[in-house]
Amino acid sequence: MPRPACLALPFALLCLPVQPLTAQTVPDSAWGAATAVFDRLLQVDSIVGGSLALVRDGRIVRRHDAGLQDRAARRPMGPGAILHWGSITKTLTAVAILGLRDRGLLSLDDPITRWVPELRQVHNPHGAMDAITLRMLLSHSSGLQNPTWPYRRYVAWEPFEPTRWEQLVSLMPYQEILFPPGSRYGYSNPAYIYLARVIEAVTGDPYQSYIYKNLWNPLGLTESSFGATPWHLREARSSNYTLVRDSAGVERVVDNGPEFDPGITIPNGGWNAPVTDLARWMAFLSGAAGAETALRRRFDTVLGRPTLEEMWRPVVPVGDGAEESMGLGFFLRRQGAVTLVGHTGEQAGFRSFLYFNPVTRLGVIGCVNTTNDARPGESGRAFRQAMLAAVSLLR
Image (tube, rainbow, N blue to C red):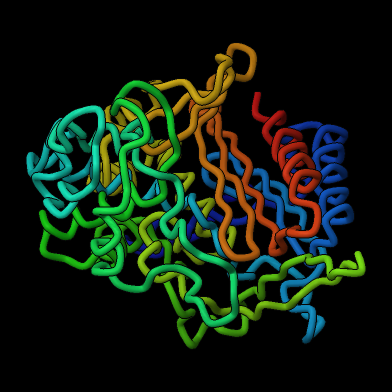
């Protein structure tokens, strides 16, 4: 296929086109099997809509859009749909922290209290809070709690998440470190809020501004946003939905609308974007610059290859087996002789995943816009099966 004409940097990644669905990156039968499992998830969970994409070298080579992005308007899920990626946002935060380390502005062995002294209020039965490092927060081995807001009762008047930093600070004296820091894995959403505070303390920029200026703009992620959707993208924003069961056992899908306030949780789960922007992010992560010297240089200004590879070294195992471990901001999955790199996400009604093979630069991206609260156990298994079916393509 002839190379398309490219815009000048900083939008060089816009020259990475969606390839026709006939591109033979994996056998038709394998892609068909993965999409069948994805469609089964949509059926089992009464999901309104979702997208699955296969990506090579940052280019979407196969794509499967199913259902609706807006049920009320009967708008089908399409290539431009703005989805919410939840905890995949943490990969942005981690890359930003490592970039500041490479510029000599911080150390991963800095105590988090150097930059966020308020955390000295948290009770640590295992020692001093000053012993908890940025590396531990990046690798989810700090002992900090998982939920940002563990006190929610899910009544209508409560905010979706805390909306102000001082709300988190006020709760710190009532929290404790759950295990000896650095000793094991324990997923923590607030850890990444604290890492965002580090970025702000070091640079003087608000977290969102720093990501726009130093990650999204250089990489050409022009349709990504945090919080409320920009006006010119509002029509493309997917609504999110929840499957609930009433007291009589009747299930129904609740439309939560397209917008919600992630509050203080933006650094750990606030990214809104179409699948194409996630593919461009994967292009950067996988080093898909090819022979384009200017593009490779642009990648390196965001973060160099040696540092990305450092982030993909195991720090702590996830669970009891050797199948999955945690690096610095990325999950690492063993699949035969291959180690895959990626992350998952879940917030509001959205669930998502992004994984790629750093050797072949082949990846998968998936997202659905509905959460099943009626049968959460069954739903979790179905989502995992759909993700693993897609991930199995990454040889």
